[in-house]
Image (tube, rainbow, N blue to C red; front, side, top):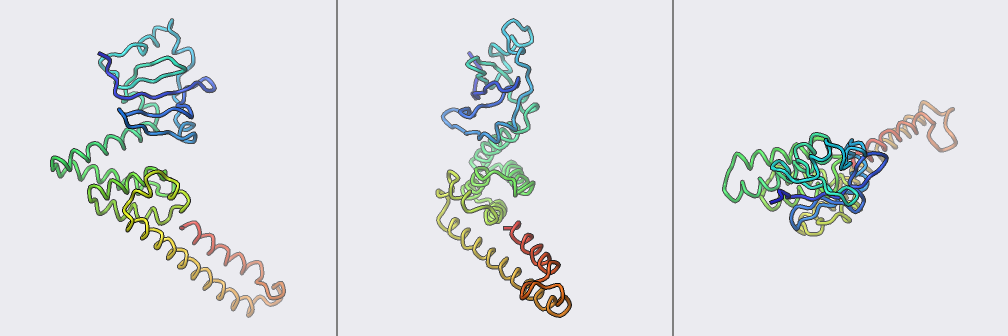
Length: 247
């Protein structure tokens, strides 16, 4: 019997193999779509000739074995590989597999009350949120928020909420699953984003008033009519840029 738990459709591009625009990772009935951007970052460095049926090295992958737990469909031809090996050569897939694995482990840990395993899964989610929150994909952020709500992970709730308040509203609203979050979460999130914008506006306005006072006293000859001089304008712009990047 074939040992296949996952299917990934990939296509040929510039002598390498990458999951195509219509490809995805299929876990049973569950489908996780992979965007074009992610696809371009997940190249698998296999020469085209390596999948030739006459190549002894490639023939190993043409039939399922005891170690096969994934099937790659490359231009219509199935290749049977190991998830572990694919993780080693593709950091993108490794991260996706790790997330899927922790998600399943978390469900089992809660169901069977395995506290230590639940804590390990929670620490994994926290690490993902802390690693580079600005570059965290919106779909993963929403997934973590759902997991936090489902399994009552308070630290993950708080941190994912904080990351979400500094994520574009358009990205959040157009990410699948966002509107399935509890209403109190989505409404509180937008209220907090509004407060952050108000706080940023106050800081920028304060700096503008300070610059106006300073410029009128010390840079009279450098001003352009009623406008600030270039130096003071740059100082205000620096504060504004700092505040905006944090939103």
